[in-house]
Image 1: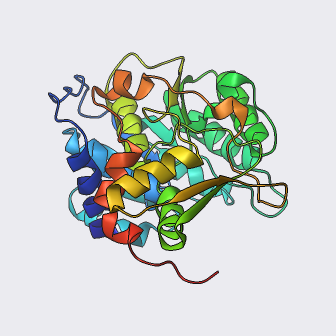
Image 2 (image 1 turned 120 degrees about the horizontal axis):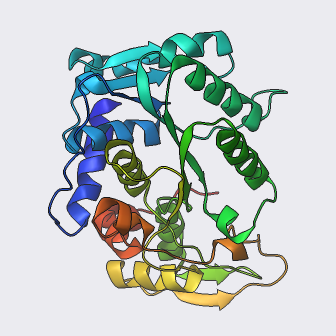
Length: 306
């Protein structure tokens, strides 16, 4: 897992324009950073981003339901601990000694809602002495979208604000990696269908979300702020198909679909971009064209039959 994450992080880092490194703020040696869900995709990439920024492994507290997967970081000096939101008794010890924490959003578990699980983590972090939590939220909240899963994000943001802890909201847009498989199908079919009532999305790479999280955790001045972490451009089916065609050299016909076409994921509240990623990290976000170019072989590989 760790080798995979390092490779994935390295690929994305190679896509962005090289800019001077942002120095890590001066922090006392005992000020430690907690990453929740550190063995997951976003958590693991954030750990790699923190290390790349020069944060010593000894300053990291990595919490996971599967801590054995983090042995490589433990060997480098990180504190690796078991913690499970569904077992709140495990959280106080998991967060002990930490000052700043990345709280990665989760879904509900059984009859326990996502907000209830995340509130347990917030309460445990406060009891353990954590001072600042950065929470991975949803970009549509900025434009008032609280439907469906967004309601959990809004409720969790409210709980974090009410906790009395310093907070930062990382309102991430939709990961662009899902477009790779979609584009491969368009290339294979030679055709892309625009769903009714489509709304474009400012897709962001997961690696860029990790870079933003690492910057917030390791530099000052982010308390009390909500950042909309988006990519550089709004992308709809027509745009994505044109990029896929240009990268692969394969023609893709774009047609408007009817009512029988499965609705697109985009919602109007997500149809905007910001410079927040660049403001926080000092670098440009990865574009869909860059991602497609880095994954050209995948775009040219026929997908499995549906």
